[in-house]
Amino acid sequence: MTPLYTAYTKVPLPEWMSSSLTLYDSYLGLIAIHVAFQTGFCVFVLYNYTQTIPVELTEAAVVDGAGVWRQYWQITVPLLRPALGALATLEFTWIYNDFLWALVLMSSGDKLPVTSALNNLRGQFFTDYNLLAAGSVMVALPTLIVFFALRKQFISGLTLGANKG
Image 1 (cartoon, helix red, strand yellow):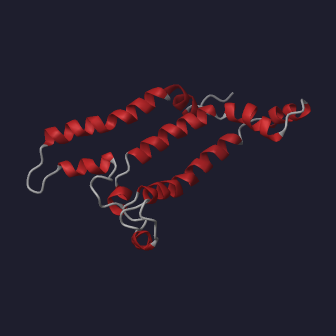
Image 2: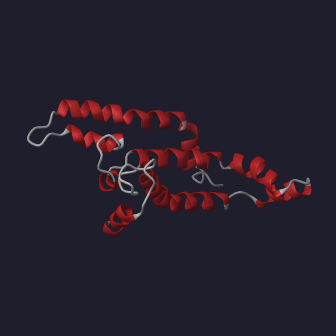
Image 3: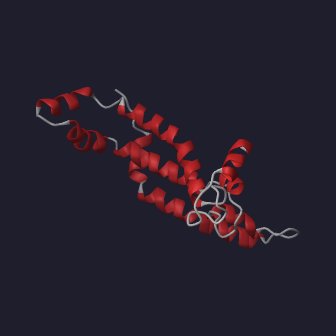
């Protein structure tokens, strides 16, 4: 974490992208770290899922005269829907609930994500737990909305290999 923090304070950015003129304390820096850390997991999940798609489907498309892009958009992507739904739900939840990277790579209170800004409701000598609990419920609502919107795909993506035979 220390080398990353040091690199973030030394990479220059134009003033319109960051008030600190570096990646530190910028939205671009926080987005970049999430993309870097989450891409591997997404590739792993989607690669393993695409390995379960029968080769006969693409072979039939080739016989019918479909090109590579048509095979991808009309055969592969619709079959990836359960995996993409589960992955979208998990990624949204992980990135939305991130506390560590925002705390380390941002310092401005107005730029902090909502979960890290929730920490600012605690005082130095006293914490209003009612206010903190109410804020926590408000912060959890978007995650619940995304889960309920993608519930069908999430459950079918997680239970995909559970009923073999």
